[in-house]
Length: 523
Image (cartoon, rainbow, N blue to C red; front, side):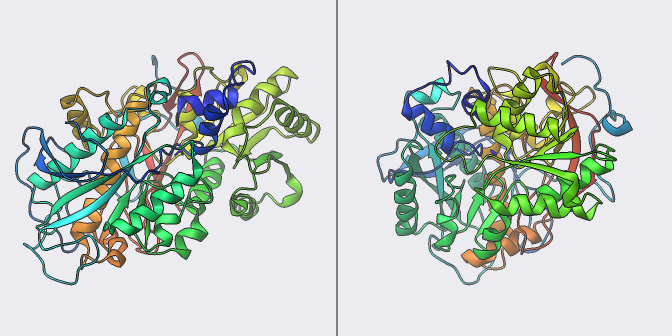
């Protein structure tokens, strides 16, 4: 997310008869399981500068671009190249663990996260220094990968390729009106991606390398291609959580809006403990083998807070790369946990949670659920078949803004308001509509673009190896919904999610609500 397609969640938790779709649609479930919408074909186009409305990173940090000017209207020009076309709840929720919902959103304990002004970060005028592939004296070419499933896009709630391209074009236009990055115009190069064809993902990766773009927005999603772009020493701004071992292996070419999994899992476990959800419990973990380090992380973090191995029950779904979890698996897991006396269920195999909950309810077993939000909150909220009634009251530990749009007293962040202006100018849904996937994808587009601009504006040189240092120098960033506050201080860990807070599932509104609006410091 990741990972939050309504289709993916339906495919995992919907009625069995409906889940018997064609092989093509089944393949989508696999590829889209991390909330990502990926890159694949070699089709591309370049978009030149124009103007648009307000999206921009916070000020602060080291060297950067020009001081932003005033906002302008939305116009865009399309220039040469490639076959891709460019066309312009009710009531306050109960607090989890005794915390009360505040009257508004505040920053993390120990200091607020700065929203920052609209526009590119301030800094010296036209800094000089070494440059890299994709950089000329007056431009920086950035790859943008966009899913394109043709007629399936609207059926799945995914914006068309053309609409997604319009948004990124408008975002690049805005930054160019503010002076671009280090006095250079940003030029996007778009890549169409049919995610039903895994081999095409590798072809897209090779095309990106051949094209020599400076960096890429959005990551590939299949396990075998997840790190293909960064593996080729092209910086990749992920919109799903990167896996920590490979993030370090391919450093400094992996950046991300959400946290990497090591920190995500630690916040998950520590947050659940701080909220009093784990005391004296026998814990069941729904595990998977695609990324075995996640299972190791969660068990290590549980042991660190007093839950040794003999107090855990584990059910492993394997690596679900060719099918979703099956009713038989869900039933076996529920029977095992019930037999072992499990009363709190955690998961690293997020896709199986609602299927497990349905099977558990069918056999009269009702444990409590605490989920890790690697886009699972959106997967559940976007599902056309809501989770069973026994899931009511499930708690999420989240590092992003999910649930805030349904929470009384919560106000949209400045970046969310800015992104909403941008989408509204194009006639698109707002980013904080939890039940409309398109809006959330547009919000993610605002975020990855903002992160890249902040990193490149503060990079000591326009070299690919400098982006992570630039992001650490940029200071606090206010991201649009669904992103949360971001403040990278270590260039070795250039990912977001420095804060967390709890949310809770309400069956009455089929929605999440934040139960304590305060951001708490993360790992």
